[in-house]
Length: 125
Image (cartoon, rainbow, N blue to C red; front, side, top):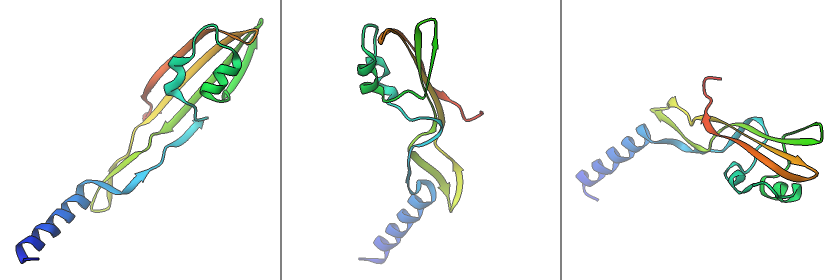
């Protein structure tokens, strides 16, 4: 390898390590609630059974009952899987924290309605 090629290679490595992901991606981390398949909430609809909902989303975080209506609450506040940005070992930022929630209302084990919030930035919380 010539000196100019080696110099270019070293400069490229320094540039990548100074501005890119630091070491590796960090994993998805649940801060509150319980992880669930939030992207599958759209599949849940009126008329489904409680078993079908649980197969799609998993066990609910909380349940409540009021006058025969059972509400399954799915909730997670999490830091998403992603890249921590750093320059020369100084962290400049992290992946966003999102909060997502879905409420599945059931009567007699059958879904009556679904309420869902889209993921939103919850970093300020």
